[in-house]
Length: 381
Image 1 (cartoon, rainbow, N blue to C red):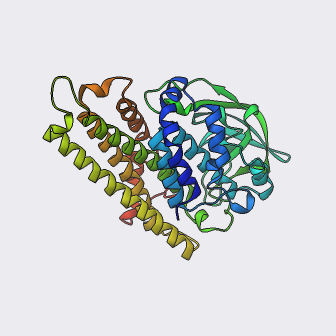
Image 2 (image 1 turned 135 degrees about the vertical axis):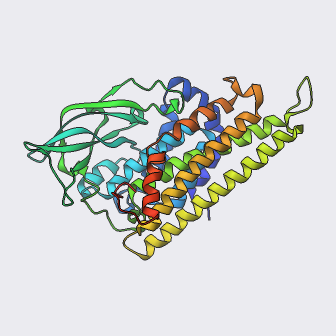
Image 3 (image 1 turned 180 degrees about the horizontal axis):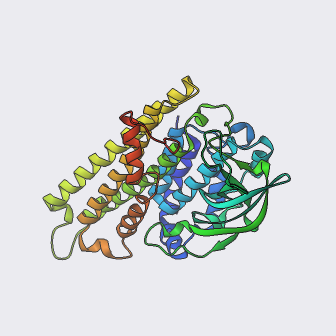
């Protein structure tokens, strides 16, 4: 049976397609549409059920995001970042998690990268920092940033000897949005910088992913960074499907000076090969996501080899999606360059997605070392 979120995402596609150009021009998702997204629970789909979340399985998360991205990549991207930020509530103290989730329509936005610094004070921390790429920050009720915990001797260390990085949640009104998001692709995500200065953050609203244990549940046995990589890839797959469908439809349209583009054997082969490439990459990722959930339900820890395959599937899906969009863009001919043609937006969006650190070549190198049994720091895998 198809999950309600997936059904809703598919039903929303026409509305998202219509809004996509507006989101791009405004450099943010429409607040009213975002409220509808939040009310449906996309931002809480990875949060624990007993704390106010939906706690869906990974395959449902992937399909819901993909379906949103077919309509509008920016909306899907913000839903992905909200959901993965919301997943941190499984690691927070219960009091903090319930504070964040008590409003079922509240949205999250955040950056885990440790671009902030915090010092210990009574009851929590004093935080200062500036974080880039905070997607959906203008529509979020809660924001988060990663921070190093500083002492007189330098960063505080964890039990493994590495620097302690804590994710810290704070109300949106306690931080500043810096208008930095003028970009080629995914412009509608509004991924501006955010900043705070000397802000008190209660201990209950912070967590260290390498030290704190999540609540029970198969979903939370899957490493958060693996879930993030799958989310990035899900958006990529949705963009590719939208581009391929748009190109296929356009290729059948009559032309005043000749036959439709689909009469060209080169266009036919481009579309056919793109369809095979997209379906293959999607099938690999979906099956891997289901396999990993099965392993998580049977064990308390996902083996490193399985984590490597999961990241491989996400990286492969993203690169395959980019290839599919390139094929569609090329098959679209001169008409693809016009702003009125969605192919040019899909082309710019997908080549922004491929730059994400979770699926970039550097991440694939780490995956290869894990797959081959070579030593390395696999905490981000």
